[in-house]
Length: 438
Image (tube, rainbow, N blue to C red; front, side, top):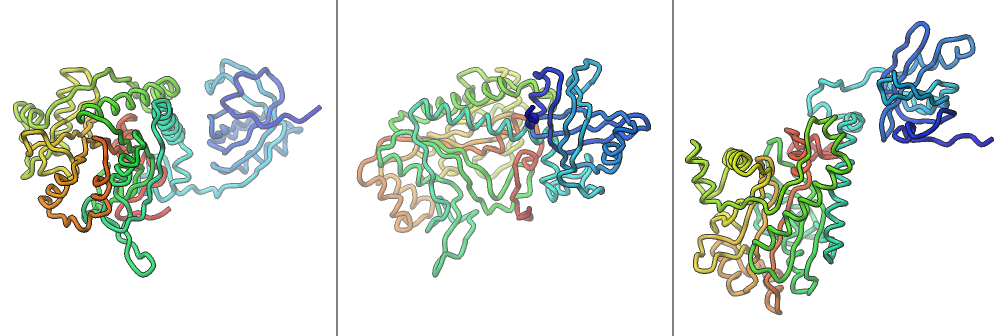
């Protein structure tokens, strides 16, 4: 008779009663006089192990008494179905126990530890079921997006993260030594995904790292983050980009709801809602007027919206349209990059948008300016030297279709989807102004 192979906890309930092998880490131990209980957790879930104390089980009893939380063990035993067992209606009665690696008894973090302390010991913090779910949700979300892109004939690209010059401006750039010279870490794949348009690629996407030398200590900023980017040819306006964007978000949220909706409800008390299309669209000037009429005047010297204004317009949209998303459109050209196309007949406005999700901006998108002479003038207007942008401007000198796209922060989407208050909770390893380890 062959020995049973390891079974994942999530697959136990489908098995008939009989011998099983499970492996994982010790979550809790209840060491009682007549019987011992161990909750063992693996990457798929948790199961109760039971060991009645008898002369025959003395070796197992001693091993359990010496177990520290977090130790990795492999056990064999008899699977039993018992609806009285709260943890899944099953338990495993032990016949053997092997301590694969023992943990130090005193754990450095507790359930009530602060986020910075938990980040110091992130590998332990990630053992929590909620954290495990975050990254399974992330996997499903990215897979749904990739499926959408591939089914719609997008080409995946991987752009370099070392650049010879600034991608948009010299602000918020990390400078690194590069042999005899200097290089910069890319804050966006913007120029390179645009390069795919004169290359004739048509529709492209990328999911990859981006870097911002931003000294912000807010709960929603990071110095290294995963950027989700798309760029498409032959558009008429930023409306085409918004339509792509909302289709992508619907595909992602639908997949997450179908695969993880019940678990998300159980662990985060969040109901995942698949949004209806089209998403509401409000020009920025109108959005500022709406929040002003509701008692909040955006206290900025420039023409931009501030975080509180975003929260308030999102609340208005939720109340008025029952929608978690809103596109704020037609941003002032004074606060947009030189490569955003401006309104025909009104150079003060751009064909651009920000996408707001549950009160926070997750993305900026736009139609790009594809006429090289206009780009040169708009760059000069922004105080940029066209000579430093020659490699970029060359893209437009040999034929390029009208195009546009967006860049979106993956971790912000996850944070807002799961109603988390801090980006650190949904990033595998966070990087900020004061964190480079672990």
